[in-house]
Length: 136
Image (cartoon, rainbow, N blue to C red):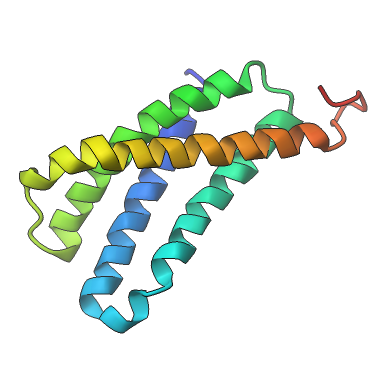
């Protein structure tokens, strides 16, 4: 299996789940959702930073391209997962929300995944490498 596929699937599902969770909280208790959305997006960003740093620390070949393709998978997947999850859990979101989720929402998710993983790659390269060699 390609290395970018599990990264893209898990990051897309994580962001789709975060979208559904924050929208469910906003619907059921509107006062509690003010800072929850930012905390939840921070969770997705931290996951990308940690995973990117781990890839760089393990000296994965071509980590930038791996995360580029992972972001391309995560964007549309998060959009579809968010629309399906909102339809099932939050309200009666329909197919009409899919267009916005697959354009602007997917682009935001791809950028979030790519930027956070890129920061993680830089941090992971700065860490001492597991085999004792110098960082790249």
